[in-house]
Length: 121
Image 1 (spheres, rainbow, N blue to C red):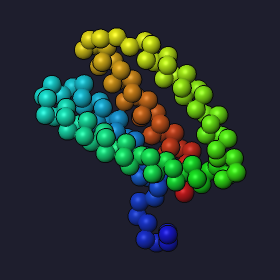
Image 2: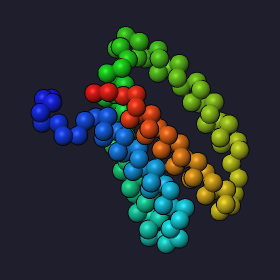
Image 3: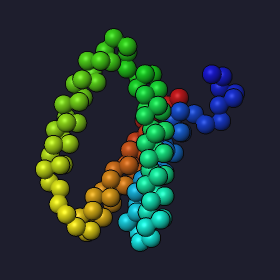
Image 4: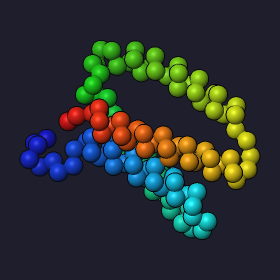
């Protein structure tokens, strides 16, 4: 791709998608309308759909082909531990759900800042 035709770089797309996903999760806390919450989740799912190809491109630029499978396998271990711990701590209730959405939204905003500061095209 030529740099003259790129008005939106992969880093900018990734940062925009993560920020938009964060905002859509945050809106689910404050909007009490069922339809608005539905469309916020639809927007979040669209962001997830744009995240994976964009992140895959970034990982391809950063990690060598020969080390990629080993490194991805190694990174799955802490990810799986995090998932097991998180699922074991789940509870019922509206307040707990709102806290979880707020934490996820905050983490996504942190990721957006990290993407903006560390990744370069």
